[in-house]
Length: 408
Image: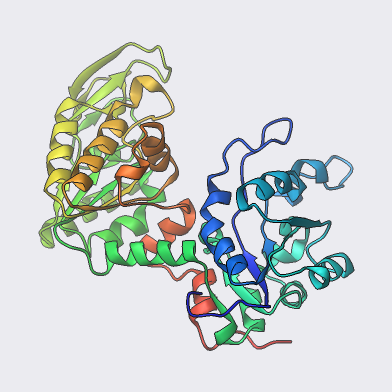
């Protein structure tokens, strides 16, 4: 978008304003809204008008018992006042995202003003990628900008299909989307080495494609969280009642062997903080990860694991982190995740490039106040995961691809 001229243009911008609201419909975290500000301001400062499209929640899956939409719970109208505050611009609201209401509001929009369209997911055509809905949305503006990285892995009407109604010179990535893609490419495609990936979370099954793709690219791989116990058991360890996916033991052994064949340093936690039950006030102890007694479960990495992981992190020049090291939601089992976040910040201060992507990993650096001490924090959990898995994101392909679906 840096190469486009927005003066006198009406610019359709797909943003990710899927922000959390409290019981009184007040925004509790405006991070996603603020992330879109640079793109919005660039257009306004050049004398363009901004038409914002976004979804909020899953209203069609949360219909009332009588089958009607709960508009009050999912309307983007709740965001208007705050949007005016953070943009310092005049913000209008359209009660629909397509149809005569949206068309009239878009036509009346003046340069320097913002129009926020109603929740795109009030229409079934959004998630179905309906060309008719995409065409109706496209008719509202002169230029299409996709700045919603968090939904780039969805082939929805407003995130991908709409791009086919704009010529290549009138569609582009927003500044946030561009930064997400550039930082992912810097990490995966042309990293400064050694490249170390830290992968956590509950299940191996959620990260199979990620692990397989990483083993083609990294110099070191750290595996923590609940998924580590499947690897430990696959090697003959005793894991007590720890989370395990028995149907993936063979795959775990194959991944370990792949790492060995490719000379990738593969670290599992040598020790674990175990508990006698899944509760914040459970009795705990530190034991070797391969020697967890019956009736106990691993809920966090232990001090030896923290030291081992930390050493590899501090040796790295490029670091990717996706997923927590333990049951991060419970403070008693959050130490491993927090220590990894601290090590990441230290490595970054020493000149390494660090990318954090994935809900709990992002939460960890935010809670510790370290978000500004790592190189880049991704705004898209699912989208970043699919990008790191090597998948093509529909929202990205729609902007880049010259052979898009034909218009109806």
